[in-house]
Image (cartoon, rainbow, N blue to C red; front, side, top):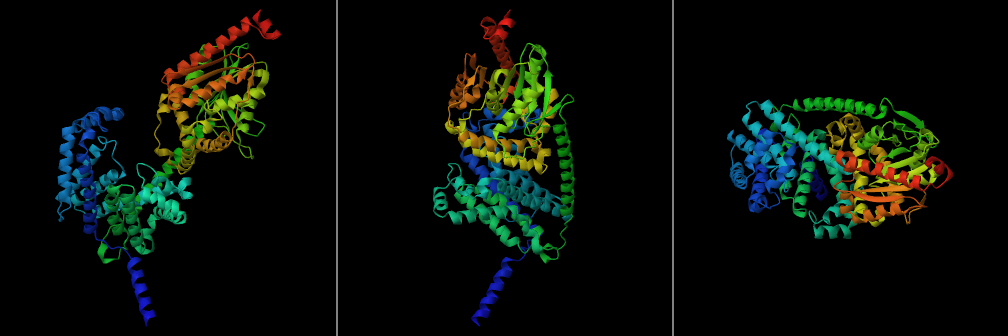
Length: 635
């Protein structure tokens, strides 16, 4: 008998846990709008308690924060200015707190819809005002309040169901995307993410961090459990909604834990405000609690998703073709490793002048150099050649061997030997990683090498000597992997042009952006970074001498200001050039690592430095010819 009773109790518990969570339309609407109102109430009370932050000199001083809205339309800027005075902002938060309190009271009238819309619209209006302090909970509250407000005001049950489905689908999407994004990150896969978050000053919790250190196995299970919850959240709809209760309960527990350990109290009410909609839409349609529910929003959303996927795929194909086709003047050659390099001869120059060959940085395009190369090609007698490394633009990476930087160095040397006339001297111009490749290629080029120009170049010891570079290495590795995956999934259609693209000459922007929004460049960058990280960390110095080749080392001020060790390493690059070589080291004021190329004023300054340096080298060689050929040229 006890066994029979135990079995009955077990079945009863199982049926209670693994059963639909039947929540009617009106109840789901009421629960969601009250939870969202609680989020807004908490938010406004927090801002009112910290009013000093919106006054002059505060963290959210509008006189400073409004600069972020410089690209907004004049109408938006005027509207934001109108509500962003300290007094107006305070009045709005007092009104929001009053309305949110009223929304917590019992009731089911249509006036509640107006209250939700007021809270949602003022949240959106004040969001830019509180640039520092807003978070994802405010965005979720805006979503829920806009939908519930509209649902209260419309009379059609079908329209209400469409709005409730909209919130439910957004809930599934938020968990699903968050989970799969985490899955791409190594810290979540190896379960180190939980301990990493708990040790931070902003979101950390000392007790929880100690627990993760003392119980690594349990912490690993917990981390992977959170990952599984988010990645598999749509299982709430499986088996006729029988998994809805454990999935929703687990998600609610997750947010409660975030609220306690990470101090994200508003997340608890904000995200759980979407759960009643999930419960309503996941119950089987024949359940009495959801009788008459209109589910046409789901196939409509799937149809829109399929259409968006087709557009994203078409855009990705178009960008891939634009990326790989090159320019109408592009040329191809095959290197010793079987790689196919796409290159441009922008200017042959005068036969007696050297040819400048430009090597781009990691995850960069040859179009980065266009401000410099256009001036050199049009205003000087130097030859100018640019190229894309294997895997970038139209260049193909064919080598089957494990990638090492020596492969890219060999490719650069082969480019010089096959694309530049054998009697011409060569100047290698490298930016970032391109500078390190140029330094290594110098040994193979021998007498053909005239000079090396380092534009804010990498140094092989930077990961060992620069704390900043070392700490950011892991983040860069994760970012490169994630970008490659995102773009493979077609998300490039959502990308906006970054500032560096807008800084390029107009004729080059479309081509440069096509490469930036294509997965090939990020996959090549990830391949290169794996080799860079391994080889740079293994570097023990000193730099190999570069005999006889002149050197110009140009540093960006923002780079050396942020990391003074970088300037010391840049000086070492110049010191490595020996044997009577002429060397110069200079800093371009105001320039950043990328803007030294992509902003015209900095790029023109770099061009002036290059031409002045090469002219100075020519004068020195004319005054002091080093060999019979130079003596004859001097005559």
